Amino acid sequence: MEKILIECINTLDLSLNNFQQAGVGDISGFSRLTVSQLRYVDAIYDLGHPTITEVAGRLAITKASVTTGIHKLARLGFVIKTQSSEDKRVFRVRLTEAGEQLVRAKYRALQEYGQFIAAALTEEEARQFEATLEKLVLLFKKDNL
Image 1 (cartoon, rainbow, N blue to C red):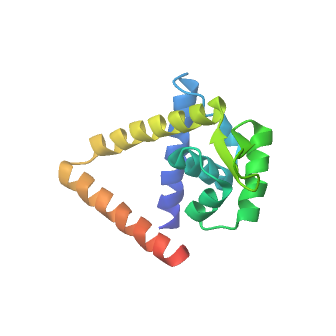
Image 2: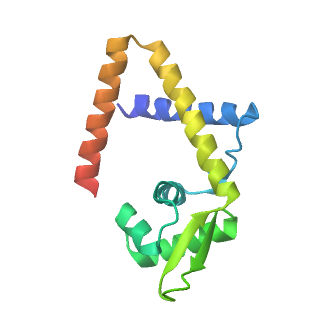
């Protein structure tokens, strides 16, 4: 099982690299970010212009950890942290243009990879594959969150 999972991850990585080399999107940020940092970027993208507390809640981690992670992402140029003018204790974060481009490119590359998978499978196989992945993700989240 581990061997095929590694191969699957490798093909996805190759797909993302091919996507970048084709000049379709700038995903060079992937190589500069850790998996945790990519999760922060995705959470911020999904939430819009969240507070540190909202990001922490989405990721089920402490505010202190999120604050540290946000500072690193800001230094790398992917997010901007601003203090609320109404409540000085509250900070909001948003993606910079580089962060937005990274997310858009990632989703486009993943969409193309999904289309490749769908084209390689029959309609029934694709339905079963998606249902299996959904089940695994749900079980993993249940056990790890």
